[in-house]
Image 1 (cartoon, rainbow, N blue to C red):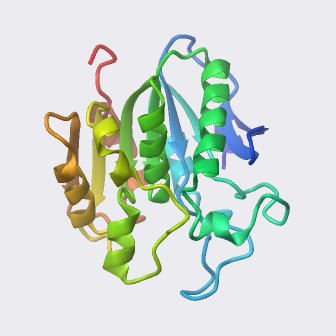
Image 2 (image 1 turned 30 degrees about the vertical axis):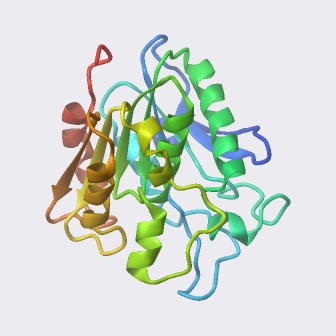
Length: 248
C-alpha cells in the first residue's frame, strides 16, 4: 500500500520499543509534519482472547496518511505492530491493558523526534485514529512542538470508554482525561462518527466539554460515519478545513 504511493517503510529505534514508520522519500523542509498514529490494530482475536500479533489487518491511519492531499505527512505504527510482536519487550499487555502505558508514550515520543528531524520540520500535527488518538493527546501534553491534534473516531478517555462497554479498565495505561489542564491550550479537532458503536460520539463530545475554559478544542459529528467508514474516502475533502493556520 505504501509502496504504491512511493512511500518507504523504516523501523525507528526507541526505548523500549522499535516502531514501524512509513514516509515519502522527500519532504518540504520547514513545513509542518503531520504524523498519523495507528489505532489499536488486531489486539483481540475474540471478545475474551487477545491476539498473538496486534499488527492491523486494515491500517486505517496509514490509509488516511496516504490520502492527505497536500503537505508533509508520515505514518507511525504502535508498539509490537509490524515488528517483533513475539520478542521482548512485547507482550500482550501492550495491546491490552498497557496499550497507553508510560513506556509506550516514551517510545512514540522518541520516534516523533526522529521523524521531525528527518523532515526538517519545526512543528508537528498529530492525527490519531481510534486508540492512536489517546496517544496523540498524551504526546501533545508533554511536547511543546505540537501545533494541532486531530482525532478520528478517537478514544479520548479510556476510563469512560471501558465503563461504557462494561469491560476491564486499562489500569496500566495513562489517560488523556487526566491531562486536561495541559491540553486546554493545544488546538484540537475531534472527528466523531454518529454511527460509531466502538467509540460513541457522546464520549468524544464529553471529553471536549470537560476541558478547562478557555480552550482550543472542538468536536464534529458526522452522522453517517462509523468506526471505519467513511473517513478515508472523505479525507481529501475534509483535510483542507481541518488544518489550522500555523500562525494560530
